[in-house]
Structure formats: C-alpha cells, structure tokens
Length: 270
Ligand code: PGA
Image (cartoon, rainbow, N blue to C red):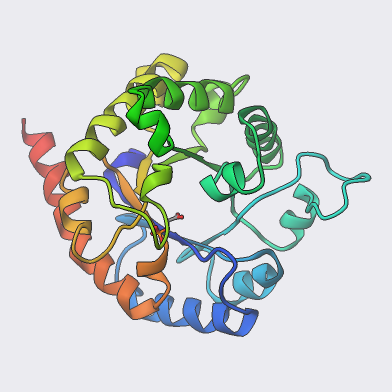
C-alpha cells in the first residue's frame, strides 16, 4: 500500500506528562482506537525521553509507534546532556523527530545539525520525522517558501531516495505553534504543503518524493482538523495540546479518518 493512502496522526507531548501519565495516556489511546486497522492509519506518540522504555512497553508497536523528541548524532562521546541512537534503540523507539521549532528557536539548533540527526537516525534504522516551518518574520518578508526549501534541502542532504522511503515531514509554521499560536488557514497550509511536495519530488524523484507523508502541525484543534485534512496536499496531522487527552485525540481521529479516506477515493476516481 502506498504510504500516502493511509493517514498519519501523531502527537508530541513536549515537556509534559510523567511516565505514569504517559502510560495511562497510551493505554487509553490504544484501547479507544483498537478497532481501526493500522493499514488505514499510522498512529504515533512522541513523549519525553525518560518515559520512553515504559511508553514502548505499554502498548504494542503494531498499534502505536513511539518517537523520541530529539537525538544526539554520535553513538557515544563527550556530549553531556545528549542521548545517543544506541540508547534510543535500547528503549525500543521507532521514530526520531528532528528540528521541532522549539528545538530550533529556543535551543538554537541549525539545519546542518538537523541533517546530522536525520542521517544518524536513518543509519540506526529509525524513521526520521523532520519538522520544518517558517517564522512570522520570514512569512512577512515573503520568504516562507525559500526558507522551507532550504530547511528541506539541508535537512535531507546526502539522504538517498532509498533511505527517504523511511522519512516523514511535518510542516509546522512557527507562528502557529503553542498557546500563542494562530492556526494557519487550510488554504495557506495546503499551498505550503504543495511547495514541500514539489521540493521532495525534486530531491528524491516522483515515486519516492511523491510518497513521503507530509503532516500539518500548529494549533490543530477539533474545529480546524476537518478542514485541514480535506485539503489535497495534507497527509496527516501532528497535534500538540488538542491531543494530550486520549479521549480528545480519539475524537479528532474519528472525525478526520473518514474525510481523509473520502478525499483519497475522490482523487483515485479522477
Ligand atoms: P500545538 O503544538 O498543537 O499545541 O500548537 C504543535 C507542535 O508543537 O507540534
């Protein structure tokens, strides 16, 4: 099955939820979504580092993929405060996120560093999730598209088309994320998703670049989720606050899944 035929839905719990809270959340989410075939949906949760082994053990890997919010790009060394790919492998992690806007802007990470993380994650058999997004200033200057193309071209530098089959991209405009964020309109988000799709095709060719899932994130909520998922270039949603309660996340999942499938059916009929 082509990857874009299934919906991608995930949440990053940031620096929230203790191990106990993460496990409770995952167990409930898994229970609520058990009847949904994972051929139709890839569901993932990215909790904080310290919860990872318990998170992975709490639900089957076939139901919920577990991701790390960050990763050091060396296997070991004098890198105080970093977590290596070997440690994440031991914890049973499936996905490694690189370049979340909070990492880029609060912790000053660069595109070159995200590239090292993406390459290292691929070498260690993880699925990298590269997050990209422009700031409000870059949008106002009219350079959002240039910024995103740079983030993608540097972030995926030296990634082969074969390796790219394991990657996903999340478009998260910096101005749309978090409590002070203003959600992107579905039209703007879709326009940018097309720019991202075109760049991925340029980098990896039509077959591989056309199949990489591109998720939208940034103040997704029960009011805007349906509109966003109905847009042609949006393959999934990467949700923060609105997904941190398993029942709320589950309602969004039930809301968007049929719309997504209808969209794909209509596209196939064209
Ligand atoms: P938000 O977070 O949905 O709370 O805006 C999104 C994110 O940071 O991934």
